[in-house]
Amino acid sequence: MISVKEIKDIELLMRWREEVIEHVFNQKPDDQLLVANRQYYEKHIADGSHLAFIAECDGEECGCGSVCFTEELPSPDNPSGRCGYLMNIYVREQFRNQGIAHHIVSRLIEEAKAAGCGKIYLETTSDGKPVYSSSGFENMPDMMKYSDSKGS
Image (tube, rainbow, N blue to C red):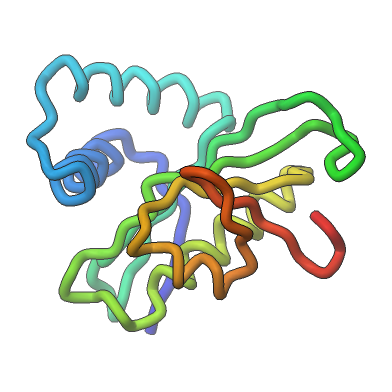
């Protein structure tokens, strides 16, 4: 069984962030980068402008994801200007192709919509695009934008 829950524990977030940097960016994070990440989490998790989630499969941690809320200029398709950026979506290799990324992305979309986001963007890599395209994201340069039947 797959579950996705919010996490606020900075140490747990830092462990996952290190793993994401190592496996997605293919580099060991230096101390300066880790300090910057810790400062980011301490500020943005506390004020609620960044929510982080961890996925578990049969009780074992298997993936993560997060959403960062921001404002952009209001537009006809997003009158409030409130938007969310889905980031750090990562599933450990041994758990891939089990639908875990879909569970993480679905939870992030749900949270972004609940926070009043009229647009949801996704930072992605080319190998992630098939998963996200099937979740309703449209291709954009270096990013994808979520749309559903309601136009949000």
